[in-house]
Amino acid sequence: MAFLASSRAQPQGATGVLVLADGTIVWGRGFGATGSAVGEVCFNTAMTGYQEVMTDPSYAAQIVTFTFPHIGNVGTNDEDFESRVEGAVGCVVREDVTLQSNFRSQAEFVEWMAKQGKIGISGVDTRALTRRIRLTGAPNAVIAHDPRGKFDLDALLGRAQEWPGLEGMDLAQSVSREHQEDWDGGYWRLGHGYDAAEREGKPHVVAMDFGSKDNIFRNLVKAGARVTVVPAKTSLDDIMALAPDGVFLSNGPGDPAATGEYAVPVIKALLEKDMPLFGICLGHQMLALAAGAKTTKMHQGHRGANHPVQRVGESWGETRDLVEITSMNHGFAVDGDTLPDGVEQTHVSLFDGSNCGIAVSGKKAFGVQYHPEASPGPQDSFYLFEKFVGMLG
Image (cartoon, rainbow, N blue to C red; front, side, top):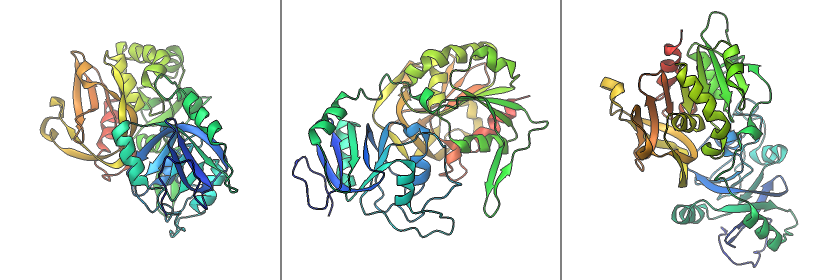
């Protein structure tokens, strides 16, 4: 049985509920942690990688609807965390969670969700919920799980309606590292785990952590860099004191304009110093803000592992017009119509034509909206790390 209804009448066996701010009640079977959490409901079209999705800090304050109906067969393990800080607060799935069937799995997804404090609901008509998001936009909601099926719907609705939403919200500080850290993790190999990073004699990248995914740093290391990670609010003076050869601007959650209130002045100053810069996702958006463009809240966002992106910038030469299959996770975007003179649009989405990449003319500075480290292509976008590290020194 699949649930998606606005009725308050609770179906038999419903131990989970999603209460949208407009009063829609979505019943289901709860799993994972008990309790309730508030956030924005979005959808992700990937068929696998649900542990990586749930631990991606860019999903902070979000409830993920998985459009693929069978979630759980890969299981979970200690190697596939994208971060140990807050990620998605919950998820919604179609079928009851599948039992693990993977030699790398160390725990069932249901058990892992409970341990991580994340709430799940199964038995939901996720196609209907996805269509609703596509038609009306990503709603604010509260997700709740009680094994007894006891819910105060009025209280949950009030909480959903009082939550201000992601627009204007700076979440980077809540998921950023609190202290500077020398990144020592290398690339993963089957049967070997993660290699140790070699730091001696490598160009130095200082990475501003706005809610970063660990696999980004592993790819920077693989491309030949040594990486020092610093908190989101690190000052220009403190960054320069580390003697970087280049600065990386990480992904992260929330509204780039809000985070940009303290980050953009630093990025502008780095541009003025001709510091090589590379931004991914939120970092790309804040690089665009620093260069004079604007960002906007998207109707439904882009989230999944199958997003085609075309290279359109003249700077790509013979590789212009090539298409990359990319992974995306963003609810805000750079407004391509606001790019000023001297900022080239280098990539666009083939789904909706939205901006997916920029380069600053006369500077070693570029950014992409998608996640090259996520390997959906699987190696279509690795060249970006090599391009950045090649600029250093």
